[in-house]
Length: 126
Image 1: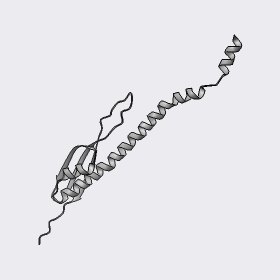
Image 2 (image 1 turned 45 degrees about the horizontal axis):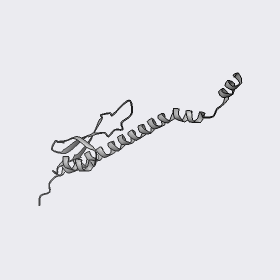
Image 3 (image 1 turned 60 degrees about the vertical axis):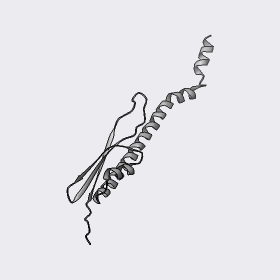
Image 4 (image 1 turned 90 degrees about the horizontal axis):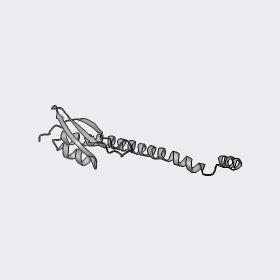
C-alpha cells in the first residue's frame, strides 16, 4: 500500500495541465489590461484630433461642435465647449473612454478631455 502511494506522489503526469489552468486567468487579465490601454491611447489621439478640428472650424466661424462630433467618429462625446477671446479660439472636447468589462472590477466610468487653441481667422475684405 505504501509503495503504491509513494509511486503516485512521484508521478508528474498532468502537472502541465494544472500549471496551465493556474496561469490562464492571469494571461486573460493581462490581455484585457493591454486592450484597455489600447482603447485609452486611441481615445487620447482621437479626442485631440476632434478638438483640433473643432478649433479650426470655430476659427472660421463654423460649427465647432458638429465638426468635433464628426471628427470623433464612434466615440461618445460628453460635451464640446468653445471659448472665443477675440484673437484666439479654444475648443475643449470631453470624451467618454470606452472600457473593457473586467471581472471582479466591472465597468469603469472615465472621461478624458482635450483642448486646442487656434488663432482666429480674419475676414478679408475686397
